[in-house]
Length: 443
Image (cartoon, rainbow, N blue to C red; front, side):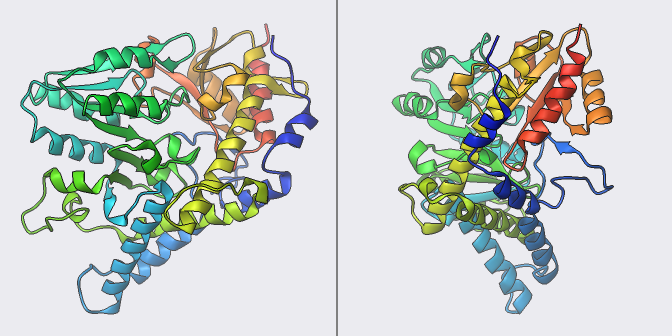
């Protein structure tokens, strides 16, 4: 039985004090209630976060004021070009990319992974293999599986999970890599389990085999800093709607690789990256939205105590502030995760609930190994019944699903219930969730 935290201890050690949390929630127009006025705690963030006001306002303004297409002499066109450029620079700073020309936009993470896989396949002979993991989202599985079906590669290999704690078996991953491995592709964090991948070790394995190292950052991007130069990945993908903006996704690629690979494109399109990787006219509003997200994070860095403003090696001052904000968000995520697992005051956590089966890392001392994302099942009760109870009785917005992840297949279950928290969630919301589950956990 895990120790129960006293409520005062939780609040005393949280990086975001109540006053900061209040200001953070004011940044999100729908943090407290939905458009119908229903007060609820939004915990479905792994499927898509709420939109921050700065992003929404920037996107609306760009949609109206810069609606013309680019490459014309009049103001709307020039403003659209400037908006796209500023958004590209903002994404580069978010990822600490060395150049905005290494940032490619796309319709979705899935479309970008398919585009990337097809470009790579043009240089493959059919004898190569791709190594990935058993806890990937299918956006980062189906493109490689499709190459195998088409005979462009010989095999997709899956590094297994340690099913007891939901961690990746990196030793097994290493044994799967050989001289025919051309791609090692892993998620930064599982969208089902919350488990983080040791990207340093995965990258070393990829580089030792002279394979492309590809990172799916879609789930982790809202939970902690992503530094493509420190990771030394060849490519990284994330989605705007998973980090407080709207749909549309972005790919980082090392510039020499973006130039060397030959993506599919229409003939008149430019031949230089990032433009040769982008299909059709860019949506300036999506770029404006991402700039709005970075403005929110820079604002958040200002709210954090000065002791958090650590010295990090980045290529711009905005990138430094973004690191500060994301490190603070990551630390706050650990605070919330501790409460989810251990409880608060008299309210038990998931580890104390007798009928809850939790998937993924469950030890409070291992919080650095996970994002604040938890999947579980309640014995003798259907997932959907649990979700409906939490929504109708407690105003908790979450879902049961397979989350387009390979994880439910590995554990041989059709669905899981998932809690996914971000920095606008509060300890009080977590307490509401735990109270609702505790009602169902009674004999």
